[in-house]
Image (cartoon, rainbow, N blue to C red; front, side, top):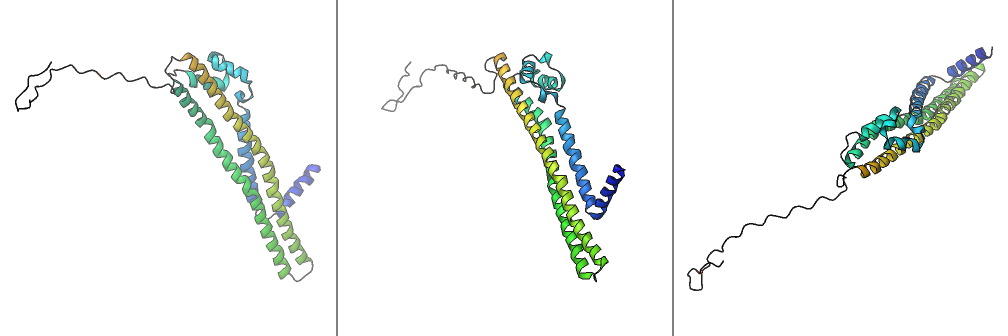
Length: 240
C-alpha cells in the first residue's frame, strides 16, 4: 500500500513538473553513473588503503609486492639505468591514471552545475504559464487550475534541480579527495624509488650528476721555426 502511494506521488510530481523533467532525469542518470563509477574505481585500488610502511617495503623488495602495486613497482624498476629512467616511467604511470580521471571529473562537475540551471528554466516556463493563465482566463476553476499548474511546474523543477545537484557535489568532493590521495601516493612512491636507486646505481649515472671534464686537447708536434727575413731583406738562419 505504501509503495503504491509513493509511486503515485512520484508520477504526480513528474507530470506536474512539465517537459523539463525529462532533461533533469537524463542529467541525474549521467551524473550519478559517472560519479559513482569514479568513486568505486578509486575505492577499489588496494594500494590507496595500504599502510605506507608496507608498500614502502614493496619498493625495496619488489618480489613481495602484490596486486596492482606490484605492476607499478616492477614497471618503474625493471631495467632502469639511471634516475631519469625512473622519473620518465613514473610520468607514464601518472599519465595512465590522472588525466583520464581529471577529464571525467570536469565533465561531471559541468553536468552537475547545469542541473540547477535547468530547474531555473523550469521556474521561468512555469511562471510564464501562470501569467498566461491569469491573463487569458475568465475566472473560475479553469483559471485557478492554470495558475496552480504553472506555479507547481516552477517549484517542482527548481526543487528537482537542487536535489540532483547538492548530493552530486558532495560525492564529487569525495572523489576529488581520493584523486588527490592517488596523486600523493604516486609522488611518494617516486621519491622512495629514487632514493633506493640513488644508493644502488653506480656513481655518476644520475641525471643531476655533472658531466665529466673534457680531455685536454692534444699538443701538436714541434716543428723547426721557419727562416725569418733579416733587416736587409735576406733570410736569417732558422733557430732551433
